[in-house]
Amino acid sequence: MSETYTLYNSTVMEHFMNPRNMGDLKDADGVGEVGAAACGDIMKISIKIKDGRIEDARFKTFGCGSAIASSSMATELIKGRTIDEAMSFSNQEVVDALGGLPPVKIHCSVLAEEALKAALEDYVKRNPSAAAKAATTDSVAA
Amino acid sequence: MRQVFLDHQSSTPVLPEVFDAMRPYFTEYFGNASSLHQHGLRVRDALKRARQQMAALIGAESEEEIYFTSDGTESSNLAIKGAAYANERKGKHLVISATEHPSVMNSLEFLEKQGWTCTRVGVTPQGMIRLDELEAAITPQTVLVAVHHVNHDIGTIQPMREVGQICATKNVPLYVDCEASAGWLPIDVKEWGAAMVSFSPHRFYGPKGVGVLYRNRKARIVSVIHGGVQEGGRRAGTENIPAIVGGGVAAEIAQERLSQRVTHVAPLQKRLWEGLKLNVPYIQLNGPEPGPDRVATNLNLSTEFIEGEGQLLLCDMNGIAVASGSSCVSKSLKISHVLGAIGLDHALAQGNIIMTLGEANTEADIDYVVETFAKIASKLRGMSPMWDEFEHGVIDSVIAPTGRGKSFSQHAAEVSGKPAH
Ligand code: FES
Figure 1 (cartoon, rainbow over the protein chains, first blue to last red):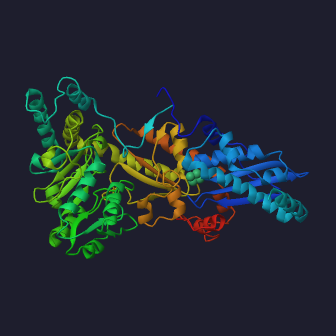
Figure 2 (cartoon, protein in one colour):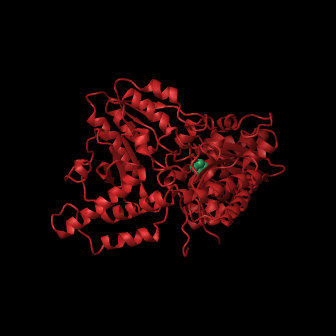
Figure 3 (cartoon, rainbow over the protein chains, first blue to last red):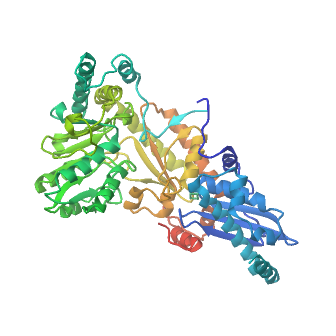
């Protein structure tokens, strides 16, 4: 075959074939595991927090190519962000950074947003002082 | 990179002999079969020959019982809706198996919205129709029973003779979808007492764009596409002559080479399944073991703790073309209804891959697939939280339970806040 056709664009395929930040973090400060009600898939994101910033992030995904690429991209994007910044992370950022996803596959990127937020919530639960800070941010955002 | 096409259930390449036979009907013999001049009469002759070739493949009495449509989906629409509308006054009830092709399932749904009722007869975990349930489902209002010969997903061969006997005893016409079997298994419409049978040449090295519907003279159907009086008034529209001619030749060749083809693919099917079983832990075959109950072309697999689309994509990137019945692969985000009907656990349905063999596949291909698939499975397991959680005893395996941990479905429901479908 002279040409290669792919189901997703080259950025998505590249992240699917060579995912960044795949794995677990030994001493994670927050771990979030969420499932997609739509298709039944599961994503887990672990984060390491240092000085109020996400120092490191890892993912594990049971899901389609789009879900794996989304988790790879999401973990790339959130590294270095403050907790407040990460709290307002949206799946649209993942979709944009990936150069677009097929409409039926947008929910896979939502899974990445939810997994990240679950990880942040887990961190906040473990660190109530950070929780107070997050709450103020919430009221400001509202 | 080695290229291995393992999706022959989706389509097959056109044989050179078939293509040669078709070519003049695009250019030289381009006439419309409805025309009364030389050009029309010539292709009419070709149409008749193709009907004879189709009739011979399925043991039909006469070529007059063969109708050409555009594909298998149109054939089943015509069979189901055509019979339902034609027999409306007798009754508005139809009986099908729960694992029919979507063209049958969705035609039924369409009719249900218009006041017909339908009974979907269950299948065994191997995908075999439950004959006692079938018998019980037929009422005096039943105007059609539809049961496929071979399942398009899991390759189960249905007990057609018994199904035919039940229908004959109850005096209800039987429609048999032979899409997944024609060209690969002998078909005898008379032995089954089938009122209608459909199949498509593109599944056995013929072209796309033509479908066949056999209709026994006694079976009543009306047209669902209206226009001119083509196909005995039962299917309006200009016939796709090149495809029909090619389809006829493919049918003739399929009949000649049927046992040769099966002798080629059956050992490959065994080699592939044995190889995968040996090299990929926690893999399961869905449907019957290779042998008399399963078509020799099909393997339907569930690889646990990983999802099907990822497997499909990685296979493709390694030159291996396969299909999947996982929900992530479907546009509706639902698992294949066949996998649902055989009661397959959601976790296993998610990890589904369908491999279908053809005459070009070789032993070396199979060995490459086994080796590559084992790598793909371990790569995806390395990324899967489920594999991890299984190894840590959080969740258990469905295929080989260890007795520790909760079920995948329970876990999935907990983290998604909704039961898996
Ligand atoms: S994770 Fe199932 S469709 Fe993407």
